[in-house]
Length: 167
Image 1 (cartoon, rainbow, N blue to C red):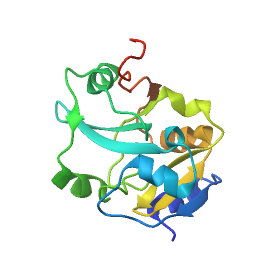
Image 2: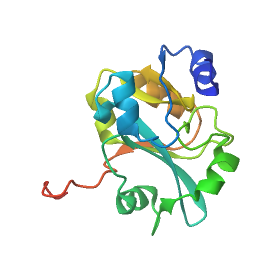
Image 3: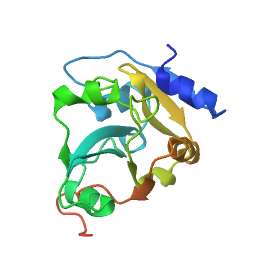
Image 4: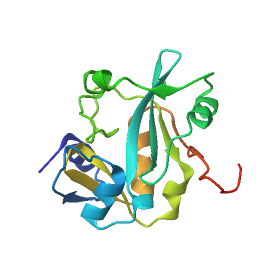
């Protein structure tokens, strides 16, 4: 299925693969998506819409990680950041939960991507619809994000796992 995200990448001449999977509306987790598309969860990035001080920001983190809101706020120069209310996701992005992508969203918001994105040859992100993922190189993802003409940064955005090293 061709999505807004796929059309956006095509418009930039960026190579990608569309990978479709069966959606379970009761389990939209990135870890489940990773299993269904045959990729490790750390290579399947989830796109989260956050808000802080009235500013909306996309945070893109590995599927097996949890967003550290304090790190995001620091990176964005905010005192605090939090998830946007679920009821506001579709009006702000044009996408429903489980299908949010930065590409083709109603409005381009600043994008903060976890720095681990560059560790892989290929990553997966939502194509803009539940059940469809875009597989592309991290470099192409970041290049396409920058083409949105918004701030795009790679920073450490994830919480340290229990028992892991402190950052």
